Length: 77
Image (cartoon, rainbow, N blue to C red):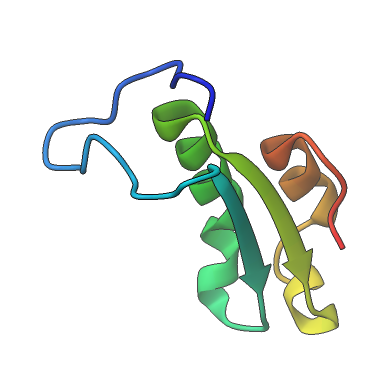
């Protein structure tokens, strides 16, 4: 995993026990999907994870796939 660019804030674990540092975020039609871009940015900056994302059709109506693509630095499936 590449080194994180910003340390996590107090109260947040300093490390994630991921061997390869890959995370897949899957969004469905719940309102909480609107926070996926925030989670993607946090995982990338605090932990240096490589993040990919998938959205259902319902989720894509709640969060813009382009916003998630910018947050993950990759395509949204």
